[in-house]
Amino acid sequence: METGFIFVNIGTNVGAGIFLRGRIHHGSQWSAGEIAYFRLPSISRRQPTIYEFSELETVLTTSRILKRWHGEGGESTQQGSRTDGKMDAIGILFLALAGDARAGKIVRQVAEIVADIPVNLSIILNPGLILLGGEVGSQPALIDFVQKQLEGGEFAVTKISSTELGDRAVLWGAISLALDALPSVLLPQPFL
Image (cartoon, rainbow, N blue to C red; front, side, top):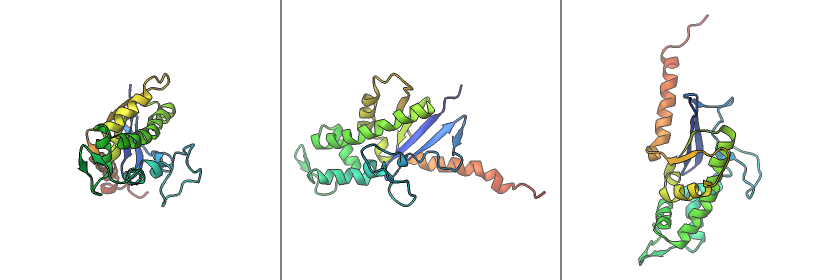
């Protein structure tokens, strides 16, 4: 029996690909998977708009992680080496994994929000698997913390994993969509 899966991309932006019954689910207006527009209790309740950062993007993207890092004291020293302004979001995630307290605090804040995504998606769609990907989503420090947050859940618990495709998952999804559309482009329906 096909249970489906959901791919959640967290990097420069936030989005999801929903795979149900062997196909990508687009929704009636092709907006299924626009999870970046989930409303969050502690963040603004404005209506979703296409050309602005969404609610989740204001807290989870690589640029927002960097902004938090610089807001929490700028440059850090980890075991005697200064970052000298060259830190990126992935570096912050690796620092958290290595035990840096400030980086760990940022990752915990991000992971608490990320953990809400699979919980909510599991309750709505009850998939067999949720894959986390993208620059931020696929990082072991984040996935470990999200899994710990989800332990002890009793309802609609799903398996969480990182995608092996890493940053290429979105590209391969786009290629899959293009290949699905190709027959209708190459072999258009005759006019009646």
